[in-house]
Image 1 (cartoon, helix red, strand yellow):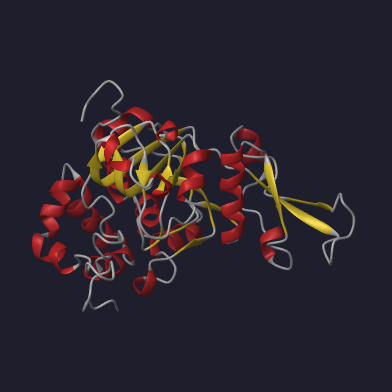
Image 2: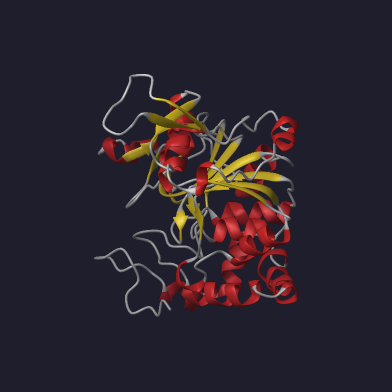
Length: 325
């Protein structure tokens, strides 16, 4: 599996190679599903700071990066962790204390922004956002925008419909494209060249991958290219967009990866409890992040019993009889 076209490397190598302080990055997944957690933890352990983070709607990945002090600017639609935290706790605390600048959009707006980036166009038009404070509440000042050439001059632009009145749409809202320096996405299956197959909902991951300058994939299963040539219509991310492939089983843990494992409600409840208090949170991260040298060591710390308890049912793709509250 390591021929001349292979992009396989360790997650430690990929993060070190493609990340830098101040980088504009995005992470895939949605709330409790398929967050690229092995990549997130490695970014934290390697100590990257001043990151500008983009996400569609995310949970643990965003919250842990913020809690570790890696992020100072965020563009997102929603940050929540299901029943354990309707709003991500370290995210909310950072906003309240003024240590994190946030520019918020609707879910549809963020999808369109990644789509624009994937298409290579500067913006996409929409009617989403009219009648809300999204259009009037901006998180980044003009000075902040001018200091970083990667931040667009305006959060959004409202303009007259150039084709005249269509229904009630006399005006349209333009949202800017997103083109991250690097995007991290976790998938169920990838080949050595970087072609990816995602089972279940793909969220905005395909657009995020195509919009990014570099893409790092972590996967549950690593296969030879021939294995993905059957049913090619099921392969959502082509190899040409991918810079690195990292084989990391349970690379989405503690979030869910459809047909492999569910989210770990026990871990997420413990995380939420610790996140509410600075000292407890530091101890939690010291134990689970800084106290281990790899994602496998983290999984060993969690223990096989927990991993077995969240194993996906072969029929439904989710764990059965799991306490989710």
